[in-house]
Amino acid sequence: MKRSCSLAILLSLGIVACTAPPPRPLSLLITPDSTFRTTVVSVHDGDTLTVVANGSLQKIRLNGIDCPETHQPWGPQATEFTRELADKKEVTVTDLGRDKYHRIVGQITLADGRNLNQELVREGFCWWYQKYARNSTVLEQLEQEAKDAKRGLWSDNHPISPWKWRHQNQ
Image (tube, rainbow, N blue to C red; front, top):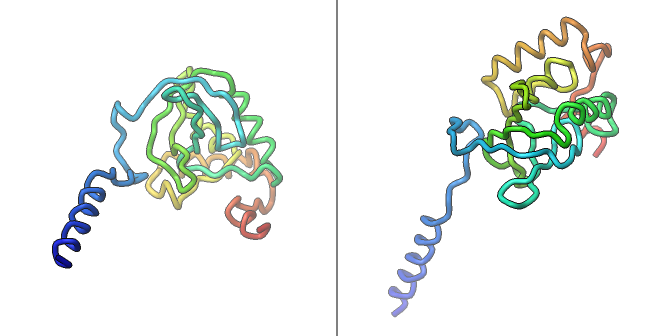
């Protein structure tokens, strides 16, 4: 009896484990099924916005970049730049998975075909977030060009990355 109960429990756990979808890695190859068109409802900060997807509001965290925090130098400018380009506008979202806060991690393509993630880096409003986009040579190149031109936050002598700023201000 004890053995059959244990086996039944293990089998039921196995069924649950098999039916639960595995987490999607951020390095997932993009497929047409993971792209959708929508309208941006609001911009929270430079790298986070809300859209309507599947009839509900969904937060999007822009992949591969990290903008300054709202109360950090250059945070308001990064937020305003994102608002100017995307707020209340139709965009295409490429869904790359979920982060630890259950937000969609994605890329935003603007109506004119530009990539919002890349535009933020190009104009110096964020860092290329190597931790999550290690192999992005495009973001790496755009960041270096912004640094060389001293655009945006790169005009400061010693800009503080958001991850260091968050750590210092916890």
